Amino acid sequence: MRLLIANGYMIDPSQGINTGKNLLIEDGRVAGLLDRSDETPEGAQVLDATGLVVAPGFIDMHVHLREPGQEYKETIETGAAAAVAGGWASVCAMPNTDPINDSPAVTRFIIEQAERARLANVFPIGSITKGSKGAELSEMGEMKAAGIIAVSDDGRPVPTAGMMRRAMEYARGFGLTVVDHCEDKTLATGGSMHEGRWSLLLGLRGMPAAAEEMDAVRDCALAELTGAHVHLAHVSTRGAIEAVRRAKASGLNVTCEVAPHHFALSDEVVEGYDTNTKMNPPLRSREHVEAVLEGLGDGTIDAIATDHAPHHADEKALEYDQAPFGITGLETAIGLALDRLVHEGTISLEHLVELCAVNPARIFNLVDRGTLRKGAWADVTIIDPEMTWTFDVTRSKSKSRNTPFNGLTLRGAAVATVVAGRIVYRHEEFGRVRTEKQSAVALK
Ligand SMILES: [Zn+2]
Ligand SMILES: [Zn+2]
Image (cartoon, rainbow, N blue to C red; front, side, top):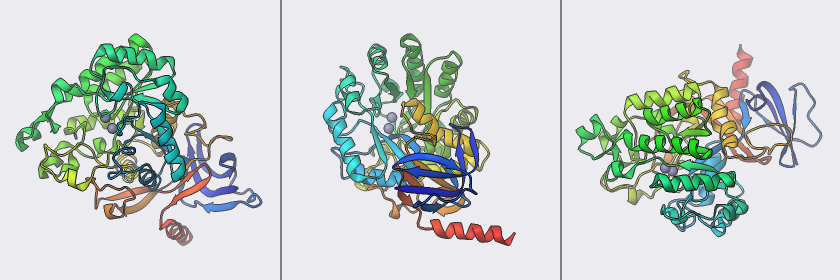
């Protein structure tokens, strides 16, 4: 099995590559980088990427696939289909399923379902505590042997500093990164949006920025105490980002990610009481969105991760304060990042590839991912930075429809996804777009 991705513009920051190159894939691995003028190797299928950017397969560090237990919201198969349609070759599955992924049996089940689907790579994240109840540590070693790549109690914070300290020491022994959902429940419980001017105006109970910042500061201090690798999930406030900035400056092993809705939206959109604007952490005020953009620009934020959280329409059809937290995000993330970050000049295309591929692979120690080095897994994301498109949720591959981005027009999209050398997604206009580009070039 040979595949040549030809005539594309390759951006691979892991090797400092930013130039026109052809990518040769054999038996699921990168066989080599060829010059565009080189002959097509014998028997190779050719995917013409003229006018497109070819990057290492993107890795979403934070998704909720809902299987096992809530298959009416999403399954591993539908989630993986939405992932590849959004340009993600890999997703990391949070453990808050039913049952919680706190045992090797659940870990193995997730891996088997993903293998059956043959779409995106699915890397399970195990829980920090049994049942994510915050009382007793999970069997991290056994789960690691079964295939988990990190630990998290995402959806809930680890309630006490003492428990988090023990978790970090234990995880460190297994070389597992601790993914941290920062939320001081004593401040945030009962809130359904960011606490500020808009929560006051709308009469909704707020969740203060301080709730996120308390745990961010606590766990950066514990990273120093334990030497563990701590990764803050979905940072959304100035204080949390500042805590990471300070931790990095003192040489601690602390990293963080941001979700697209936290750079694309702010809390005034809650005004219409659309429950698809309700997530945790909540959409923040503009000053915090500014801090997110600064953190992306200066490298404090390491990754973009969707926090894809599907819910059934009936569940979201409740009153704002009663509806569950979370929105889907796999199919809109790359378009939002290109439109709002790259085209606005906050980050370069090269930095986007670092945020979506190179850094996630490093943070979760995913060997031979996030790179197009010879011998690496042939996971590839192909981007059209200029394609203008409109997101239509009725055509989503996800089982759920809870997105605030339906009908939004964006400039830039992922147009093909390759996993272990197999083309698992190609945009329906892949060929047409390319032809138009070629004619545009020919006209010049
Ligand atoms: Zn979370
Ligand atoms: Zn989450």
